[in-house]
Length: 556
Image 1 (tube, rainbow, N blue to C red):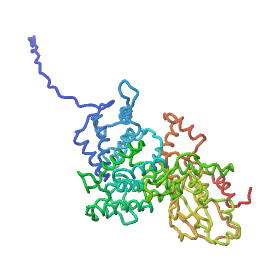
Image 2: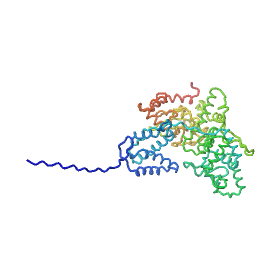
Image 3: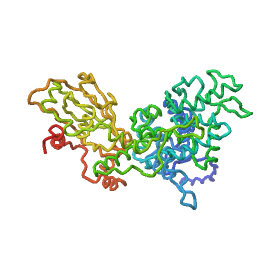
Image 4: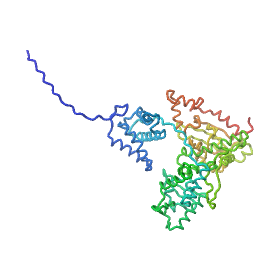
């Protein structure tokens, strides 16, 4: 019998304590080194080639996510992104006041979406967790233009200020759509006697801005006044200078312009800022009937969506004019309300100026725009004799997959104004918004006059808010046959998107929502459409019926 072994006394070994790695909310994934996460952010910013201010904003947005979670970029889940969104939408403790506005939340989440898109394309991650997280909806921004009365009061206040020559010139230059920061960077060399050359601008939106005769007169009076002082002028001198004892002849910076505006606001009792002159300029030109594309060129806007705020006033004026025409009324538009101006009278007789942009001007511009009646598109034998060429065109709506397209034939004597109507019918639009052709702003020109060859392409943009870009290709040029229809739709694929759905991005999101009855916005979006909508449906017979009155105006 073997003796029993004794059980050794237990040895207690103290365990060393290690700090826990922080976990993201709702995740057990380990984090990656902070330096590596930040390195990815810096790589992203370098790849984007952003302006310094935009780069700073992007970095701050991504840092807010990094501070919220320690999870590795590849470990972030859709649930975490949704929780981060809820975190951004939180309310201040004990109140119903939100900590961040919808605009800020949208910007931060938009930055995160852009970042993850880059991570996927760069193959740092395989899945984008932000795809299904919707951005907060924002109301369409309104133009913050000044009324005629407000501009007049501001100009009069500038005329009796301590530096009337400079302050009046400053107001009138701002009334030509320049940003305050752009004005502060102008030198004398940037004024050629007719235009201002914007050499440094937001988002690299450089360009030239012509001055109106009134603006030119006020600016040159200021320059003549400076020439009579002891200041030594050269091409490198700032266009607008400080005249204080401390900073005499030095550049009037952004802060200096802000102080001038603040003094004028206090004097007039009008709460305004310098950027509102830019809004006034753009809205005024659109109301006067100027092609919005050219207004965008002068204001150097890159985003049609941002510019949309200025076309809304013109759309409203045109809609009311159309209503008056249909109802047989002639009531003035917005009667009794202040009108918007580019220039107004000053307090000095030698600077007296006129020329307001009333809504009546917008109405006249609408009534004079090229319109298409059934007879205008008539292809009678006499009209057909003027053009022996049939143009076969294919139009494709950009950024829509699978492709959405139409193929149709028109005569060479079809004008761009008439082609606009054909495009509206064949595509399925409702002609609610403004449009433009890349070929020419003169829509009285016909296809034969535009020297179009087979395979050449041009664009047609409809709705400057949603910015639907149509690429049109000339597929064939054939001689007109005796019995050949002069206007016909040959084929097409897929239904036209609903009006005002947010452009190609909004339409794609809409389709995803409608395909998922469990989506939280499914019922709302279904009700918004207000009809059965099949994105794959194209009814050639229905389009042909709608084209019939244009092709044969005598038909019922």
